[in-house]
Length: 362
Ligand SMILES: Nc1ncnc2c1ncn2[C@@H]1O[C@H](COP(=O)(O)OP(=O)(O)OP(=O)(O)O)[C@@H](O)[C@H]1O
Image (cartoon, rainbow, N blue to C red; front, top):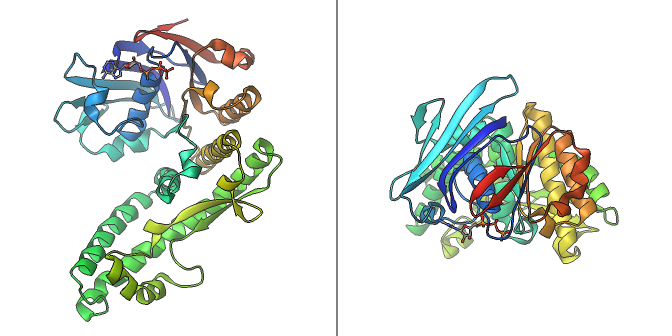
């Protein structure tokens, strides 16, 4: 999917903006506090239905308004056009629309627009908790594996149910509870199989890119499924029954899974510098973009916020080169154009300048 036109209303300090981005590279420049990240945040909303900066919708609505909206005109790989939009009013659930049809099902909108983001906080993907890495993997699976969303939702329900039984100190081995245990195992094993296959595919892309981005290290990627390596989920659940009863929740299953990055057997975060960690994240995201394109023949949208603060010049160039090579629609923000002097070589690009919330094409 590519965005042909984007319109914002009352989004943070941007009262109104309309822009026609490039199909390839769109550069957004402006001073600190001008509204660059807000513009990127509005595009993120189309791909995730939420902000990457806050959980409070009120913070996103312009201080002088009661709602914000983001609309986009886009086209898919078959040339079909879509009009998508979302609106959020104070104290009301969000509404989204696709070709004029209103819906409260965010998944409809999100599945249309595969958006990824790289920001100064992106090192959390490696430094943060396993849930960050599961979210990363599940973004990919959501877009490439039709059944994944359904199984992930079912698993969440079954996990809640199992945890409720544990809290009630119910006997999980009793015949009346065995049905739920079997459902939990079946669904958990399916999710695990999806994720293991996905990481295996991602690993090939990642290790190739990492050998170029971090040539001094041999970084490897592996998947920890969330329970002991050589046991089935059933075996682990039975073995941990007493322990789970003590801690009050389920300690084995794909909700405890992780993706691990290692260098000579040691966790990458213990060895890599901050700049190298950013490169490892860039390599992971580029690998995910390549895999997405390979598996779906679709194009994704990539947002790079404050790229100057993140990577040095030749790394910035390599990252953007890699994204454009697979025909990703890239949006980049920078304080100064000079942070992106290499972009002269790209023919298909557009430049925008943001000042006090006003967005103008250069
Ligand atoms: N709900 C809101 N209504 C109006 N203005 C807001 C709102 N939320 C934030 N702002 C202001 O919008 C401005 C733009 O913020 P934004 O983060 O987009 O800037 P930026 O150009 O990315 O800056 P930097 O380069 O410093 O990251 C800031 O001055 C901020 O205080």
